[in-house]
Length: 124
Image (cartoon, rainbow, N blue to C red; front, side, top):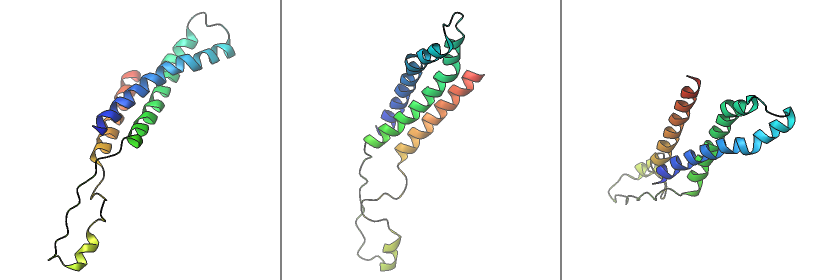
């Protein structure tokens, strides 16, 4: 569930960033450059600044969701009473998992693939 929320958060972040580029940056550029009679400033925002803002906000929303939604608690295995005491040092401490959180890795991988696909599609 954490991975799905992170992916959806990144998609929402990309849309917010793209729309935010037009709401915030386009009026600033029009104020600097003057009237946009032939749509050149709007196209510049649409194909350069908008996608850049979309990528940045998608990454920001991804990590925001991953930070706010806590991962599931991993069950801790009971130590074996017949185990060699030296092997207890190789076991992770209680409450720590044996590896990385797979939902985080899946979410970051999918969002990275979506960003790369979007950039390739935009430049292709």
